[in-house]
Image (cartoon, rainbow, N blue to C red; front, side, top):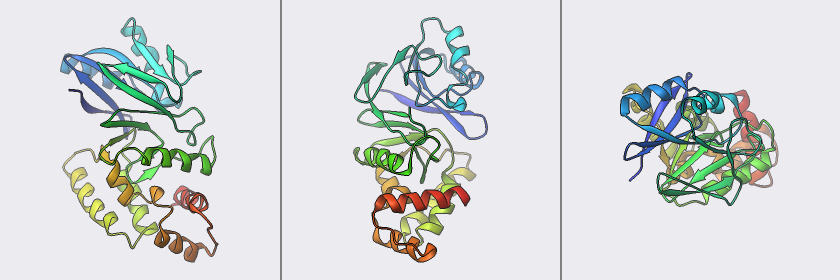
Length: 251
């Protein structure tokens, strides 16, 4: 059985470490040093890296890790420095005896990938706890389509985003979706977790569908509230998402 552990990097990044029988795979190692400390303390041998996209806080540690671990396999988008095994939508990656499906989820960046099996979803900066990534290279429609693709995975799938942004996202959700009781409930629960020094992640996709406004853009109450606030007619979920994402950028 694979276990997954968060390793803190920078101020709010998580490097997710998958392990089984003393072997390890790391997702998005923006820094090498904290990962190396974890591997040493846990007695783990690093076998592979999974990269979701090219931003420096996700790939900054790759070169050092490759130098320290000869033969290290690096899976990720084609063209990302350090990737030894380019993968794309529809491919599969087998690590630690487990097969992960590769999904293209552009929007935050054009090259963004996610990796999932029956239980885990490593979604980088596409889906966050109660939020989603900014649109840096794609379009709102593109990111909305990517989130819709992730939301179609089984409800019990655990989402492992790359940042601890949940509380700030829930503060926004409380403003954007004030009639949704799931937001207040989750906010109380996750605030208590952070006060205990715990991660708010991972979360089941079922929870994200209940309390993440970016996955609820087809909800009539959410849409009506945005129309009233901004005075615009929002004809569909994509238009709703675009307004919501723009508001969050300025929140």
